[in-house]
Image (tube, one colour):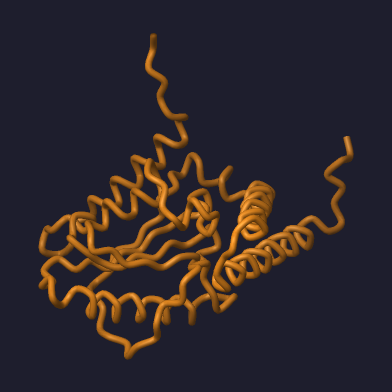
Length: 215
């Protein structure tokens, strides 16, 4: 029996993610192999959608979000991996164990404040609040698009993204209706609804005066 493989577009995206995680810094270190760090995901409009920190390798945590292994954010329909077009990583290679919590907390807060300032919604999809602390100097980051050129046009099409986002919102709303959830998760639903409204509005404006159903 022939072993089933993943679809070609999924394989291509996974390869692009691995290539990104293998990026080397100026000292020749593989960034994805840093033992801890902070990361941010961005959508096809370069809007920040999720910020996180990890005390395991950046490679492990990012792959868990986006490839084989589900995380709470994905399982709860907070984060849709399909929406992630770009990733940025801030690696920490040499933190002492006793300093990890404080340094990563400050770094995550700094990244969070930075991406909120850049967001047109002034929000990301994180369910939990990231405590605001004094900003710190961050290590040099790496950022890249993880969607190959041959897939990008189809995946970034507004109609595809609207359908996907609407489905994610429906799934998230169902989770909320069936469980006792946090106020943060309800806030995430509201942000997703606003993101959907914006995308649908822009698409409607783009298509104004056309008749897509005409022969």
